[in-house]
Image (cartoon, rainbow, N blue to C red):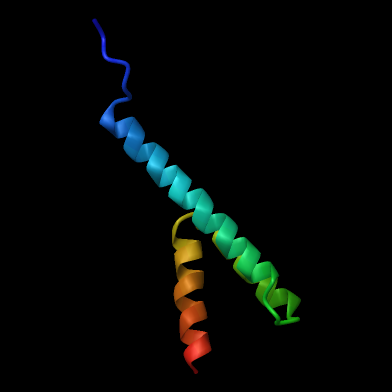
Length: 70
């Protein structure tokens, strides 16, 4: 009788994709709700998070934190 469970690799990929989607959505919401009226700044971050799928949102969160400390 065969077990009905996904292989470990599939579970890891599903967790990775879910984390990516969550980070992406949170980053886009935060970028769009930002109080800065500069359209170029906003567009640059939107494109950066879109074109750099995992690194883009992480860079945004790191840079956002360093901007708020100054």
